[in-house]
Image (cartoon, rainbow over all chains, first blue to last red):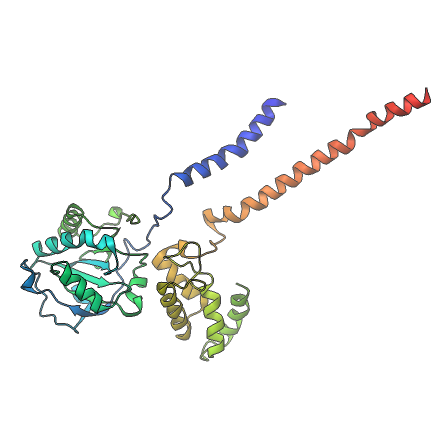
Length: 206
Length: 137
C-alpha cells in the first residue's frame, strides 16, 4: 500500500516541481518576439535630424535626406537595414550610442543603412541629446503616436532590429548593442539572404 | 469578454454600417481590457496610465473604426507581441493546461474527499457496538 501511495505522490509532485523549477530558471522579462523570420513592417517616418560633419566623425551619406523628408522601409529593399529605437530619457541608449555611430560610419557608402527611431520622446529632446553625445552618423526618424514602435512589438528602448536584403526581420536585439553583434549580424545579412534557421531572440534589457 | 460576445453578432450582421461612437467606446474598452500593457506589470492597456498604453488604446479604436473585428484587432497585437500580449491565454495547445489543471485538481480533490468521507462514515459501527455491549453486560 505504501509504495502505491508513494507512486501517486510522485506522479503529482514531480510535474509540479518540474513546472516551478522551469519557471525559476526563466527570465520573466525575456519575451519571445514573433517578428524574426517575418517581413519587416513597412514604415514611412519623417526625418528630424540628419548626420552632420561637425561631430568630426565620418558620416554615413544621408542620401540627400533633409529634415522633414520621409524615409520608407520599402525604398531599401535589397539592402540591409539596422533600425535602432531609442529615447533621450533612456540610460542604456547612452551606452550604445557611440558603438552605433562608429559602426554606421564604417559601413558608410555600402548597402547597409542605419536609422534611429525616437521612441516616446519629442524631436527637440532628441536633437539636444544627440548634440550632447557628440553627434550621430545616421539619420534620426520621428515616430508620432508610436505606431511604428507598436508595429515592431516594442517593449522598451533600446531595441535594435536587423532587416535583411529580403526585407525580413532577421534579428531583434533588446538592450544595448555591441560592435561584435552589429558586425556579425550585418556581415551575415550582407553575405546571404535570410534563412529561417538563423532566427535568434533578443533578451530583455536589464 | 461578455461584451465582445454580445457585440460580435451585431457587428457581423451589419458590417457595412459604420460603428457609432458609443459602440466604438464600448468595443475599445472591451478589447483594451484583454490586452496586456507591455511596459507595466500585469496591467491591461485599459487600466494603465502609461503613454504607450494610451497610444495602443488609440490604435485599437482606430482599427475598430476602420471596420476590423475585435478578434482582428487582437490578432494584430498577437502578431507583433506574441500571445503574451493577451491577458487571458487562449484555451488551446499547451496553454489549455492553465484551464484544465485546476479542473483536474478539483476532480481529484473531490474524489479524495469522497473516499475519505466514505471511510470515516464506514468506520464508526465497531466503535459504537463496544459501549453498547458494555451496557448490556
